[in-house]
Length: 473
Image 1 (tube, rainbow, N blue to C red):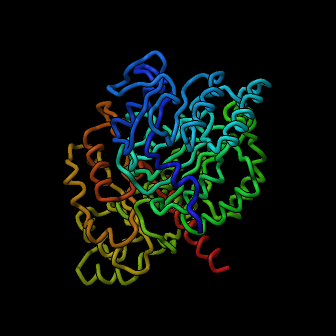
Image 2: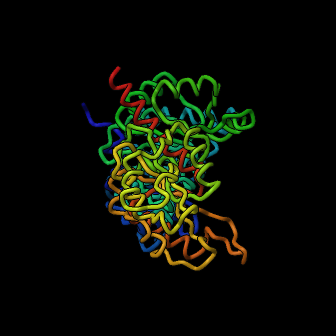
Image 3: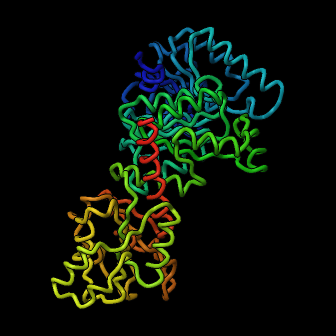
C-alpha cells in the first residue's frame, strides 16, 4: 500500500505563516508552534514587520530564501490568489487556509473565488486544508493553533469540520486524561475532505481511536465505504452537527455543507459499525472508556459502592444501556458465608455498601467481584462527600484494591453532588480535583453520574461486539 499523501504533508520541515504579527491570528500560530517545539523552521510573513516573536519576518513567501513545505494563510480572502502564485515558486506542498469568507457566505463572488483557489492550487501541485478552518494540531510535531494545547502526544485521531468544536473537544479531552496523535479542523473541505482524513487516521499507526465532528459530507458513498473499512480496524466515534431544522440551516452558513436527512444518516451509521453520539459530553464519555480500557466482548457488569436508590437506579440505567446486571454469583455468597459474614445471603448485585458498612468492606467484596469470571466489567461508586465530612483522596481511594480492580475493565462513578450544605461546588473542590487527577494517573475512566458511566460502557461494548460480528461475516 502506498503511503497516504497526508502522511508527508502533516510532517512539514518548514512552515510559513502569512499575515503574522504578534497581535494577529497568524501570530497565534507562530507562538503556539514555538511553545510546542515545532520540529522544523518557522517563517513569519508580513510586509510591515521585520521580526515576530524573535523570528525574522519576510515580506512575502517568495522572498524566503529556502523552500517552504507548508503555508498557513491568515490574510483576507481577496489576497489569497497572489499568495498561491508566490507559493507555486517555492515548492510548497500544502496551504492551510485559516482565511474564511468563501463559499460558506453563499455569495456568488466568494464561491467563484473559492473555485479559482482550487484551480490555481491544482495547477501548481499544491494541496489544501480548509479554507475556513483552524488547521492542524500535531503535538508530537509541535504544530498547533493555540498555546493552551498540550504537547503530549496520545492515541486519538480527530477530524472536525468546526474549529470551535475542535477546540472545545480537544481541551475537554485533555482534562479527562486523553491526548491526541493528530487533529485536523478542515472547514469547507475544498480539497482534502472528511474521507481523506478518515482514511489517513485509519492507516496511522499512532492513532488507536478516531473521533469525528461532522456537519455534512462531500462524497457520501466514499465516506460510508471508508467509514465501514476503518471501523473494522479501530473505534470511530461520530458526533453529527445539523441534526434538526435550525442546525441544518446553520450548517450551510458555517462550512458550506449540506447536512442531509438524519433518518438516512442514522441508518448508515448502524451499517458501518461506527459509534454515533449525540453531544460532546457523550463523545468524550465513550472515548475515555475506549482510551483507557481493553476490548470488552461481554456485557455482564458488577456494580459496587452505591447506596439505596443509587443502586436501584444504577441497575436500571445499566440495563437500559444494554448491560446485564447479573445476580451476585453463588460462589461469592458462599465465600462470604465461609468467612462468617452475617449478611452473606442478603448481598446482591449491585452491592449496596450502605446496608451494612461494617460487614461489607469495599476492598473485600470488590476484590471478589473482580476475580469472579462471571463479570466482564465492573463499575464502582466513590462519594467525595461521604458522611459530609472532610476525607482525603487517599482515604477514599485506599478503600479499594486498585491492583486487583485493574485486572478487569473498570469504570468509576465519581459522584458530584452539586453543592453541599456550605454552598461549596463539589466538582471544583480540591478533593474532587485530587481524586480526578489520581484516577487519570491510574488510567481509570470516571464519570459524575451513573447514567453517563452506563451509557459509555454500553456503547464501548456494543462497538466491540459489533466489530467482532462484522469481521466474522
